[in-house]
Amino acid sequence: MRQAIRDRISRRTFTEEVLQEKEIKQIKEKILQLNQESGLTVEFRFDGREVFAARSKSYGLFKNVCSLVIMKGPASDPALKEKIGYYGEELVLDLTDMGLGTCWVAGTFDRKLIEVPGGEEMYCVIPVGHIEKVTLREKMLRSAVSKKRKSVAERLTGAADAPRWVTDAMEAVQLAPSAVNSQHPIFHFKEGKVTADVVDNSPTDLIDLGIAKRNFAEAAGGQFEMGNGGAFCE
Image (tube, rainbow, N blue to C red; front, top):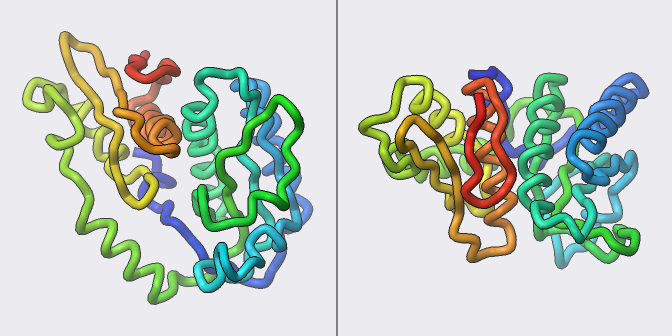
């Protein structure tokens, strides 16, 4: 399993050190690559502090947020939410490899301060920055999430018949972030094929599906088809 999957945790407390030019260049290059591959219009904003400044939205939840990644794309894309999760998680893992902290954020920020061009939709942002040791609050949140983590058997139908490479990849799915730790996406192993789907009852379910698929693909070494019920391809 990719080490970044094990290392990544949601970081809400950043240092006051801003991103350096070489880091910004690397982030922008990666975003450009992902946009070209996916058709998304993901955007990096060096100074996004005002987005998290409103007390009513995020006061006390985040500290020293400066830079962020705006996750958006064409509203006409039927797989937009899933792509945001799938390619956004790839970016998050790359940022983790760089030693930077990140956090998926869908609700506790001021959307009105992010201008989105006509024909596009923005569903979430990813704060990114330098981090120090894990705070007590973050340790408590991580512990709470770990205790509520669903087993492989709960998230994989056909688990009893699945080969080791599938159950190993499902361990990466267990470590995937999801909105309020809902862990809604379910994977299926049948007749040698792995698929994944989600009931899609909440605004973030398809984003979570994309994130979970990305972690599985990273661990198994392949790609997932887009679409609710899409299959894994080695």
